[in-house]
Image (cartoon, rainbow, N blue to C red):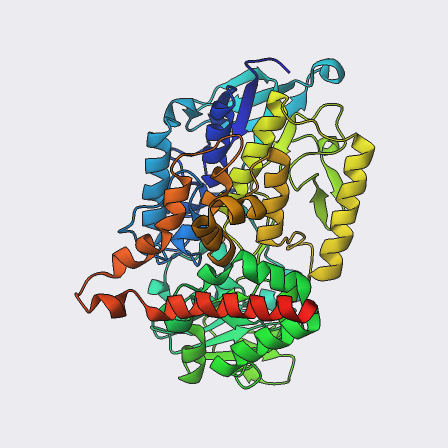
Length: 535
């Protein structure tokens, strides 16, 4: 690998921005090609959805706590809400790009048409990238390596063949990709198909203006709240302690405990939500409003649709709804990389098989990486950042990948593990455990925090790393890319949680939340009890 490797980054969304930064940190020469006129990818709201681009609705608020979604060396401002509207997220990305001087490396309104291996690829590992410019011209560029960051919410899955009679439907139907708001739903009878996060959000929002809303689900879902015990963000309890418990205790017990906790808030069977799968087999739906909407009759949960006859929708249990005006298909997305040669990607089961969920394992040179193509119980931003740091280290030559045969073997093992532990399909072929995946990549980079070292050298920090939330700052404490502000960021992460809540003065002792302290103390007590039981 050369010292000044030229790297093409495809897309200027959250994955593309952090990939740019990772390349610059390693002394590489990145150029980012962005087909739109702005950065942000999915989080750049537009009134009209654009073909082959991710799309969001006007009211979208992220369901990940801000401390768990920010980049590892750039905390989100303290006064920003704990769960941010898409407009705030885009502002954060702009601040990140400005702070690290990324804009000068982005070519906007430049779409990648085709990427092919150079004739001497077996020797050089180089690629030819053909792009279309905003004036309609085509350009060809040579790059030493490629990072694809074009996302996986670009191609809506509209399975009309699975709904007999849809061609007779007298109303309007569309995919959630086209949904922008409930303005056209006033006084109408609406059926939403699919109970993922988008389906739940759309059902709740349209129920405020529609005559009736029916939420059709094939398999049900476990639904959790963002506002957890003591009013705290639910993700802040994603700790290393909890992760240890997940490894030590039987899965059947963990499922039982988790399901018991969720059912104590609202009985999923009574609400018509109870799924066929166990809690930890699939990422749950996050929606605070849906249970109340069901309880108040604003949303009526129904099984899968059997057939459609004109304006009548018939469900698999024999029930039907007449005079339906609108059907919204919240039925997920297909994924594709149309600009890549087909032989560049390795297929494994339902998914594109990537080593560490990043590198194509079947090429002569490790010069093609895909960043952000991952699905877990955590935010994409810190995972994409960790992937990008790993990729940049490999491109720079600091990290050597195994042989093709070894990588393909690892990919196939990953596929078997995913299919064994999670509910997978063509639309959701990838799922990983957030902490385990982050730690795995961090170990390869050399930035995984050493709990033993912290225990003996910095016990106050150890307590926050082990019993506190697994925020990305932990991966800037040691090793390549170490950030001097990481320790302080960890010590002040709860301050940033409380800051936007300080809108009315109350007693300091109450505001500091004894609930949070009690929760952390309870975790410590449980850990001691389990340790004693083992010895």
